[in-house]
Length: 156
Image (cartoon, rainbow, N blue to C red; front, top):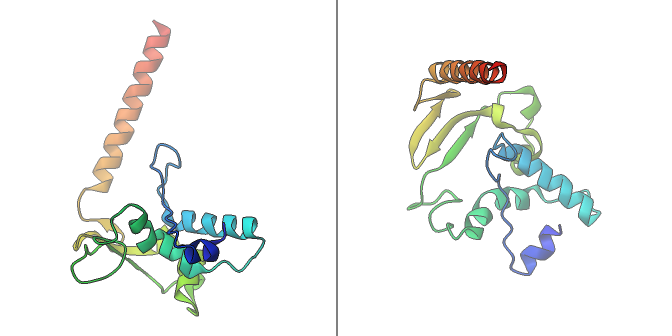
């Protein structure tokens, strides 16, 4: 993938996850890293522009979906969809190049806050929308019940 040539040709490349049915983790940080490695492998150049990868995950990805007037960048009039990272981590120190840090070193575990359309949905790494412990317990209970039902059906 030759990011620079494609951008020069006016092609906006967007990257993203395709849903939990295939990758099962929706981890954009991993997607950015994989895109960087794939671009380096296919171009033969190890110096893939981290800013271009970050753009593909944000404003260029929004443009590829026809949503760049609504999201993908921090601007007045756009939705305030933001993630805040805790940079006080050994693997994120020191910060020399923000784009490179975000693409090559940061991960979902570094996200401390998430805002969707200006509403805080994650604060201090905890959902503000649901009781995660209760949800996990319900999932475990239903999984046990389903396993028991499947076993009973096999024995019958």
